[in-house]
Length: 307
Image (cartoon, rainbow, N blue to C red; front, side, top):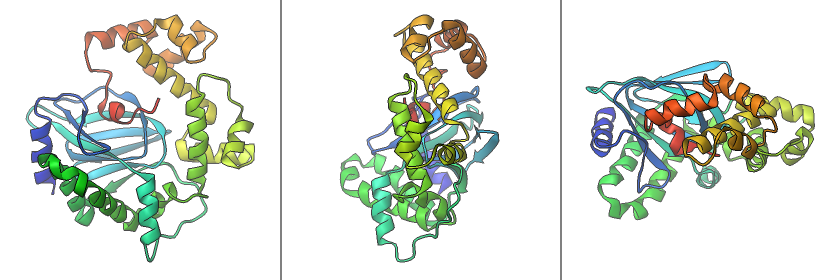
């Protein structure tokens, strides 16, 4: 599977050094001819598969390494620090991001005779898996649709349901299933995350977010941190700083305007927190990125940036 997948990905990304959106819904191809600097990423629920090379991502205080034949599964919208760690011109990093469809997941779940059992504890929203057997075969067939674009509309839905089936029935099914269960802690936290994303530039009360999740403030805070590895306020700060960086890199705002646009009242506080997160003051960081076109776009960032 890997050998065939590498050939297809290498062919379709030969002239592309940044994330390549495809005609297959939710599928983005990745290539890097050299290791990249660590970059802050905001993931949506997705399967992030490495076909060649290696990556790592930090989630809270955990570092997750994944290499050829492995994938990062993201079940909630979580900010992480990620990096392409193994890549060269001769053997470039090749991978893909496939967004997971919760509606398809619920449909497949309803058809399972023996759905995976779910415990009541709250698990982190990020983990790695081995991609082999039927899951690997279905993923390869999905990517092969790129060679027959006229078949995508007819065949994509069935292959996507198949991939979802193997994820739910596999060894990590109990973790994946949480995305689909209406009353799971993860789904309730996801509702609060949507609210936080929609209003990240405003002051948001923990009590209001807890109400959206149907939890008490203390229980909500505990489950939010278990899923995202951040407190709600830390999560909001990451959203603000990621959006401010995007505004400045795209040329839509200077430092002061970006700070105000994302909800900061003090430009100096904004600059301090920006420097802590990105390792350089805003102006210097943006100037560095401007001299290196595309450098700010780490692999999955464009594919999964939620702001």
